[in-house]
Image (cartoon, rainbow, N blue to C red; front, side, top):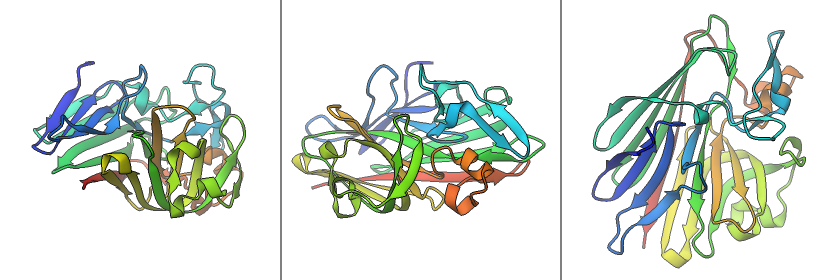
Length: 291
């Protein structure tokens, strides 16, 4: 099904498609025709998509867990690593669709990812606020490593300012794998508010407090992104000369499972181990405000 499923109220409208379990649009209702908080860009028709059962990249698509080595499909063109999990490239099914809420489900058989799992995603409007929740359940008879996150796309409207309480930032190689965690350069200092047009980055800030503010002063509109406690790292993708940027709440560092297999503790990598039938829930909320 390519036609978006819609939820709406007097203050906002959201579109969702089953291909990838993606949000395709999130717009405020205004007197002058509406304002896009999230907006699809390019041919993929994704304004936000779920990162499940891991976020960002796994080096060469390979990782080892509990003595077993796994090779994942390389799922993003000629990119050398597996990227963003598998949920964003699978067909989800509808569990529930009300006026203001959609609940989707993905049941995976353990092929593209070596462990069977079930993911449930809730997209809900509460007034103008958008709530997005992901639940991940391990259906395997053994434990499995896991990570979760969301990948929302925000439009640029003139000067856009991103503010977030962050610690350091991961310096990366040319394929976006982490090299070392460093103090934030001045133009990446999100703590005091950064001009998105000057970020030119695809990097992860670690740790993150769980709150980020995006302000479009030319449009007299802002949105506050908040997340559950486990989503305590923030990926910011702000490519040069594009109409969009991404602010992605994530639970673990890039290539976390390989770092974990090399002996780094869970608090450093963010790797979550789910036991058989264990369920893990994370969420993101977007709360817009107009002057």
